[in-house]
Length: 397
Image 1 (spheres, rainbow, N blue to C red):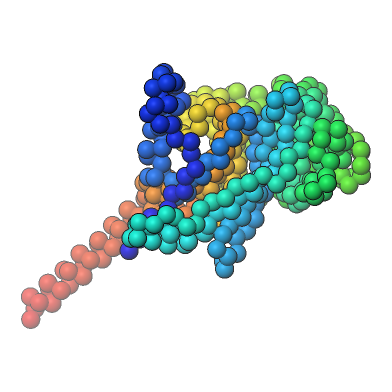
Image 2 (spheres, rainbow, N blue to C red):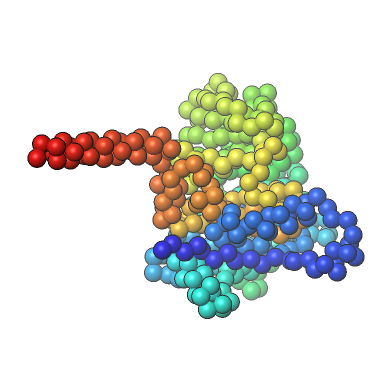
């Protein structure tokens, strides 16, 4: 017998009296009601942390879940706007029960009508104030305490957050960055990406679409300045809305933008300033791109023409893969301008229903429909041949 994992919610439900007082229901609120109704069929796990601050960007710090542990832990950095025309850098920590605990808890709650015992928990570790308006944030994969922040200015700031976890740390807006990166021709747009295979190599873009590449060798020196090594002009990038390094190929990175196309760039042929591969992937402007850490052929893109997760009531500003665990292969974290943080995982049967899915290792065990049909057809042929042999043997007797 297979048991459906428990769905964990933490949402702000609106009563009938509040609806009558508010009168008109917005389009996004109506969509959110429909999403709440179908959420139990779309997700294996869904958790919403309510917050009123408009969120800018999010990135998860992946931790591998041990087999013997009951819970899976994940930390993620979030940037948000504050009321003083500035911004904040926050570190959040989330604890999620393992999939086996969720299945056992779901069975127990159904048979004994008890409240779920294992629930996700999320809380803030620290909050750093910045005087400028932040537009982007990235975490160094080789050191999760190294964070770069991009504001509306041309300069990119680098911080070492290892000492910010202390109780007496200076988290005011007067804190000086540990390193500054210069070289962008115009103001920043929040588009940055670290190379996971080449330490301290940063890729960034500005509002005009120019791309710069830095190698931060002296990041430990206080108040150091690093100049860009390579610059690709906007005339060759076809408009950049997001960019990302490939997690398994050291010389490849991808960009998406206003051209509705996915561009794959190769560092070995950057002298020509032309992408190695161009593919049209959307019918409208592409806004986000993210490579999957566990499968080199999976690319997650977002656009203005389509959406999958419909629980936000505001514009979605950023998303990130959440966990590094085989039980949560499709887990993501998304934020929006209305404030809440959504941490969710797609249901394995709802995702690509035309394919055969193994729940123990969902993404890496996908089998195309043709293979399933061919295998079933082959087994049918074998059964028919065996039946003919049995009939012929019975007739001979």
